[in-house]
Amino acid sequence: MIDGLVSGKLHIAPVLRQTKANHDYVTVTVRVPLSAENESVFAHVVAFSESACQALRALDVGDAVSVAGKLTPGAWLDKEGNARPSVDVVADQVLSVYSIRKKRDAAQGRGGGGQREDRPDTAPVGGDIEDDDVPF
Image (cartoon, rainbow, N blue to C red; front, side, top):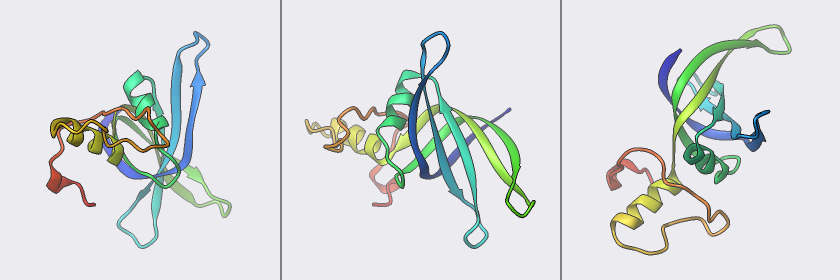
């Protein structure tokens, strides 16, 4: 496996699942743009840690997200029989705009945490982020 970082937008909403041993995990699909025009690869992401699961569950389809963890490259066949790339990721860390805002607000002593009102369970996960690193 390869350690890597994948960034894109949620293509399929997070799904909470349970193992046979009743441990929660979350699956999502992230659409990752490639350098070619309108080309993308789909990253199938699974998270087992509580913090990564909570961070993914706070997101909706279309939200920007970055996940870091173990990558396994793969391929699938489209309707025309063409091979298309795919990536499977076991996410150790998740970074989204919501976790960045929460960390920034906490560092600046603001109480609201910068959480989305409709998603109060957003968890901060990831490394230190500076204001200049956030594109919005």
